[in-house]
Image 1 (spheres, helix red, strand yellow):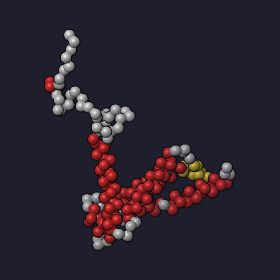
Image 2: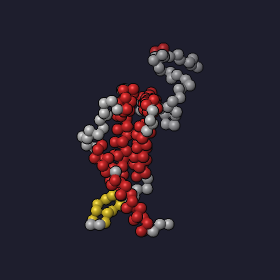
Image 3: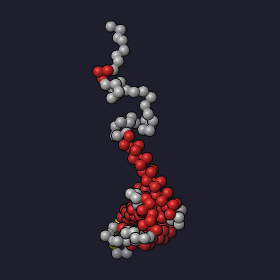
Image 4: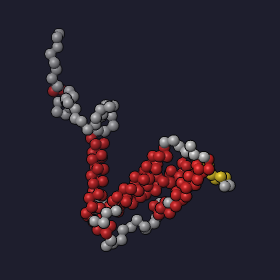
Length: 179
């Protein structure tokens, strides 16, 4: 079990780390030109190879999302300051989702931009885009309400319903009745 002094020390460290990240917030939330790609740079070459899914746009988006999650985390953690006292609110679950979003998106930007070889950077960017298309295709294949709860939305039905475009109601065969 940790003491109150230990907890205070940990919270101060967290606040220091969060404050050190504030410059990124200024860059991503302003009309900064920091996101613009320099002509002739490696990143400009990557963008040309990945057009219309520019690597720089995806990396900038990942960084913006990470910074936004970090900012939201800080907003939920730190309350009002009264003199030298700061109120802290710890949520048992939700703040971890915000931290996960910050870490995952930061890591995504580093993962895309990290390799020294253009081919690998381009492959990574396009593989992310392909995944986005696969997920989008799954979502649009089954509009809301078309899938029964608990059903696998990627599985095709074993049978055709009686009324489909291939079998309009007026052509549906009726089973003989026992009249």
